[in-house]
Amino acid sequence: AAPSRTGYTFDGWSDGSNTYAAGYEYTVGTSNLTFTAQWTALTVKEISVNTAPSKVLYTTNEKFAPAGLIINVKFSNDSTTTVSYASASSSFTFNPDLDTALQTTHTSVTITYGGQSCSQSITVEDPKTVISIVFSGQTTNFKIGSSFSGPTTITAKYNHGTDVDVTDQASITGYSMNTAGQQTVTVSYTENN
Image (cartoon, rainbow, N blue to C red; front, side):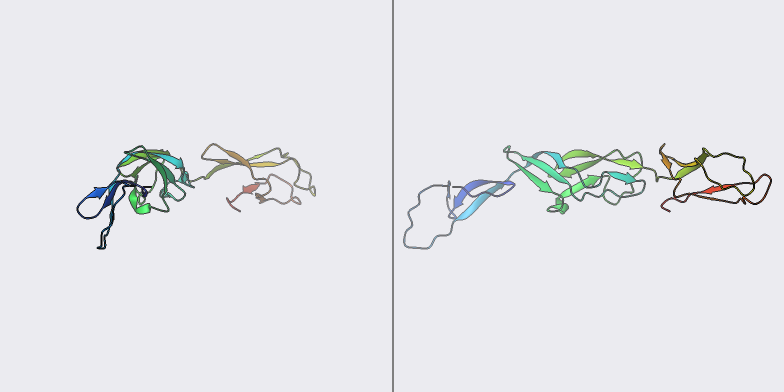
């Protein structure tokens, strides 16, 4: 049987003068012979993503991280294999490259291997920030000595359009339940508090 080598086609065995196909019967004389395998490098015909990188969601200014990426490779003789970024990182190039700070306008990364390209979708978002705090469900009239409690909901509104109930993480300060008159209440919430 012919030997195999990823990315190559076997052309036969050479004795330095002639090349013989796999399975050829050769009669050995009285002198030593050396046969060398003859290979022709295959060209990459097509690539596609087999397994997406571990990370496809980014925050603005992060850099593309190809860890976990595996591609399908189809060669000029229609043989196929898979290649992981981890095993052949120097053979891959990317656009945007690995030193580019990603922006929200980046929606995909072009992967090139063996002269062929495919793309991987990514999402790049602005950093998640709280744009407002909504305080709801609380009465505004109290009797001196009563407690500041009840069906209060404190909601953080984010720049990405999401709302999160942060009642248990927020603090309410700036008031005294033992003082009559109008008071200003401060509702505070710190992300990752």
